[in-house]
Image (cartoon, rainbow, N blue to C red; front, side, top):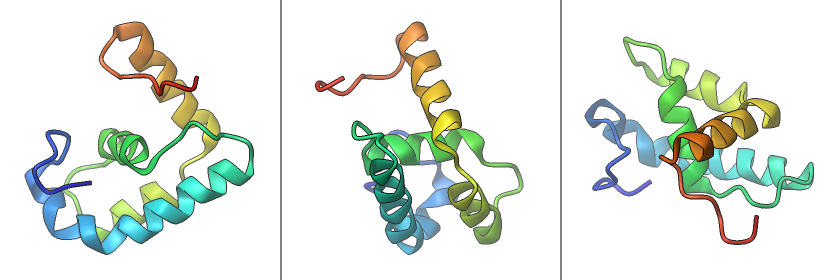
Length: 91
């Protein structure tokens, strides 16, 4: 979730550092459920695709907290079919 990340929308930059810990916690939750290939950056990319407009901090937090492993895996699978997501090496 670097500020110069190409996936980073300009309106998300003020919030990125504030919610990084929340993304890390959600990734850890997914790992505890057996989804070991997820990382914070790919989860952040998923979150960026799910954000409603206009953006606000509470909507961003809602998207992160309501993320489900099935929704994330669907996002990764569709991205792999389209070829616009890099799959982790250990998958």
